[in-house]
Length: 171
Image (cartoon, rainbow, N blue to C red; front, top):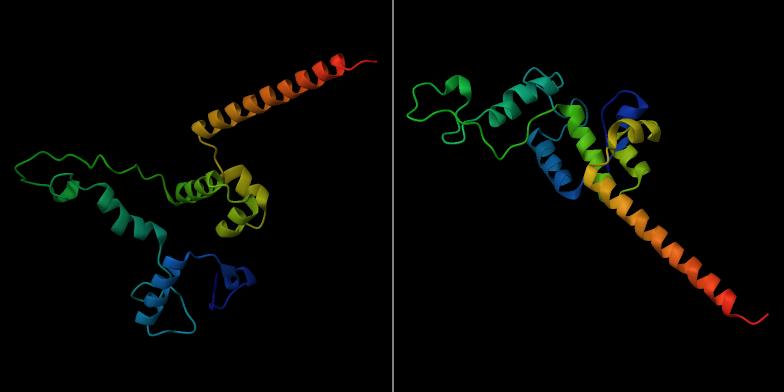
């Protein structure tokens, strides 16, 4: 758990969850910035907070739109000796909220409690996390139904045994 040192609202100063590896990287990044005690953690060259759209446009999108053979983006793939073929090993980008939904859904599949997922996403209400972020995959639904069917069969077997034992008892 890290504690935000930024000035601002109580929620902005609240603790936020970070895995150990990410915490180490953040500590190194913070040291590279000169170990400031205030200000924006991820700032532009002029000191304003980074824009997530710019991160996508400048860092993520070029990777997603790169040629599988040479790595050049479509716009710079001019007179190459091969045709442009986008990378097949990458998933399609659906935005930052999809990233958060994917995180919540994956944590849910790992049996992380909903309240913990709520805190990781920093929602004020667990209902928001459950309703809008945790998505059950079809294979999870299928496995859940199979588990329920097995439990029903087990309960029926126990009921039959109990009834058989009652019938076998002398009155």
